[in-house]
Length: 174
Image (cartoon, rainbow, N blue to C red):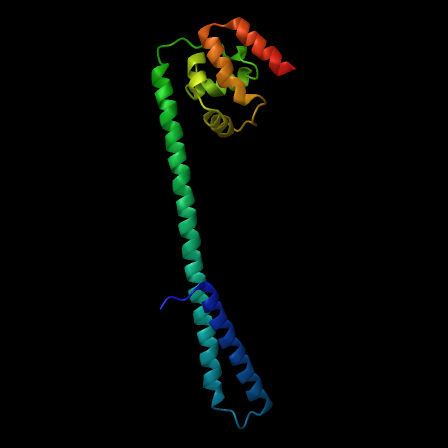
């Protein structure tokens, strides 16, 4: 038979209340209820047993939930690492572009992106906003404004369309 945590807690509470009632009854008329002492001890033991049993399973379930969350975090980290490794292999021979030409990217964010393997406009254009947010968060920096426009701007820069990039940057300033 499988009991829920609530049922175990209720059984423990009932056993404890009955033990208290028996103990009070023994205190009121000690001569007639001497045989109730063993029942009182038994009920206290039962209450402790069910309480411990309930807590043990609650701890096991919370440990299982924590393990599942940790497994998901590890999977996300592995996925991000695989994407970063692929980018590094793609751009290993390419000369690094000046990512600071993208509106919102300064020297600090360029360093963060370069360390993550994003060294060219083309690579930045292929990055998703979620990937960029994860990289920035992993670096310990706060999310910059206009991060969601970086891939669009990088696509224009990769094509060498500097006039369109300048118009795009002007629109962002308005």
